[in-house]
Amino acid sequence: MRAARLSVVTAVATAAALTAVTGCTEKSKGDGDGAIKVTAADSKCDTSAKSIPAGQVTLSIQNTGSQATEVEILFPDDRIVSEKENIGPGTKYTLTAEVKAGDYEIACRPGMKGHGVRQKLTVTGASAAAKRDPRLDKAVAAYREYAQEQADATIPKVEVFAKAIKAGDLKAAQNAYAPSRVGWERTEPIAESFGDIDPKTDTRADGLEKGQKWTGWHALEKALWQDKKIGADQKALADQLVTDLKDWQERIGKAEITPTSMANGAKELLDEVATGKVTGEEDRYSHTDLSDFKANVEGAQQAYELLKPVAQQNDKALTAELDKRFAALDTTLDKYRSAKTSDGFVSYDTVTEAQRKELSDAVNALAEPLSKLAAAVVK
Image 1 (cartoon, helix red, strand yellow):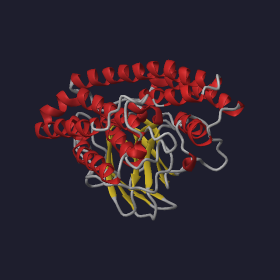
Image 2 (cartoon, rainbow, N blue to C red):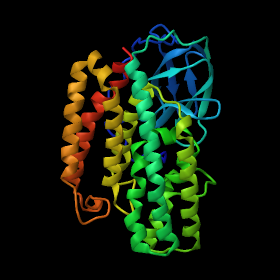
Image 3 (tube, rainbow, N blue to C red):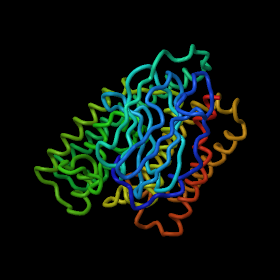
């Protein structure tokens, strides 16, 4: 969900930075320490290099502005190679990605809105000849299959949701809402990488750009729970949601997926939990946040498990910590299971502040070691 998330910048968003490492691809040569320095401010985005060799690129990001910012590496068509959201004012982050020869842009998006301030980046030559661990290629292939499976499974569920809306059945639509989102939430970084799909399907009211029509799940959520009405507008929105998600389903196979994007995506999913689900901002009308929370964690864990054989060989202590923290977070989440709701969890408005802090602490404890996964798989 690429809505503005300025009210809460949690410890997850400012967790320890990824360590820049040299792996099987050549390191970026932006400056003396091998990283491109990116200085993000409220109205500028300065980069220390405009051209680098193909291979592994590391961005050493510092936000000197007054707002949380997002930094992205973008293809010419605005698909996202890699990104980091919610970099708070005065904080730093290091982002590791893999790039092939071609033209790119580095974008800083103050307030995580709009087109952003952009700098050109030319990637020259060819990636260093591969001696990449074949297990990583296998992990990428398996993750691509997983993402496609999630998209394929989402369509029938969102069609049930849309059918209930078009029938004017408020209760059935409410029951179908959270289940229709699970596959999306498990693979959200891939959906966000296309740039144009997420704003149409998963934007909250406070994340709308100037002039943007509000469409997608959350516009329908408000109608179903707050307004408690289903009219012609909602029926049209339901049809559009199905159409937009079928577009996502068809485009999954074109997503750029690398071992580092899988690792960074797992961390992004934890950031989604911290900045939207734990706070109760994501599903503010239905209070089905814990269903989305669980799906985000499941997606992060899937990426981790696929990368784990290589990460474990390179950093056994890290994978031991990640195993421990994933298990602890799952145990904490299980406390809020309920057989009485359609999504299998208690309504989030019944979760106390103390309980939310417990959930937040478990997320933070996982996010810190998870931020090191990308470095571990490209050693």
